[in-house]
Figure 1 (cartoon, helix red, strand yellow):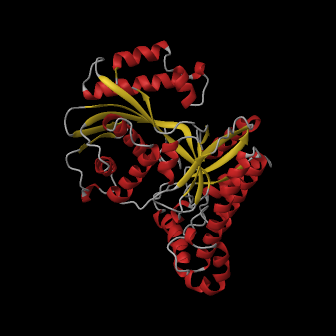
Figure 2 (cartoon, one colour):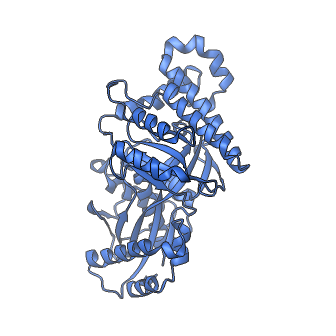
Figure 3 (cartoon, helix red, strand yellow):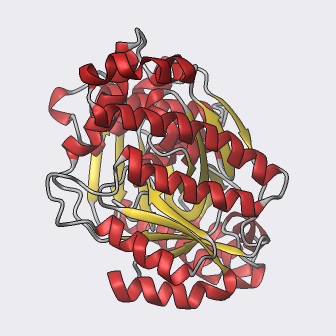
Length: 431
């Protein structure tokens, strides 16, 4: 670890410029904003926890992630293509010599958890405290005694953006605990699984592992979740900007508040199809067997469940094809597959709108305007859970200013975010 004084001096001297440029996909002469963010989180730590510049600290980072391929396939233990983005959460942290874990998140306030009490607390379900306690408990179970620490956290990963702000936070806490108490021994995929464990067991949300893996691993990664305990993954090396395209995430501004039932119905209906064929999830079903069984099971599971299963099989196949296209440098084929995934999500998965309120279709309108602005170039699709939230677009670099202006005119200033694929996942930024 290093003192806040040393950290500040190194920032001022440009010692970290090359590292910041690499992580945030910038040139070394463009990192002033990121130097300032690190200085800000260190200052916040000092002020919040009453430290002077001789205090020893470390800076940790975890990125948000974007879904590149495989829409609603992970919960069926299928295939996905994901990537970390150049928006992240930062933590300035150090042990405090007690059992108290104190995490102050800017904009949200302080949360404290006793590291000596690691059993689930029922009243904490669905709270950030439960995630912190669950991460500590799992790390302790893995043989690394945990203790108290203080952390000051900032984030530019917007909540509800489809960029997985919750998983980003889980990975950030996991990376910090790994650095503070495990000597950095935990692999990043293990940190992702720890985050999922905390979310499943302590927070009470039966989520898959996609979000945590996307935030933890860094870069573009394809993952096959068929063996959910040991997902198979590998990196896919590709630079969208070098191919002449920008990746844009567009926030439709629609409210997620009343969509729990819509989200829950997707995995439930896919599992109903699998159950009708004697399996738990669709990854355990052969595609040919599914199609052969449609006449017999259609009345049992319902038409929409059949269509959602059609999407599942199609999008898993498209992930394989997307990876192959990127690895052979065929970006035109990749874009065609993105558009095909978007059409499948709209037609078969049916997560572009909620049919309880068909008059409101913010995702559909955003996609329609995006297609109009792209004028036959690039690609766009619904992003993440759907029904509201975000869409994703691949925009030729020359068209980015007009595209961004058009989407912002529709949805509000700042709705269209231009992102880059960050090559580094959860990490120790400085220590």
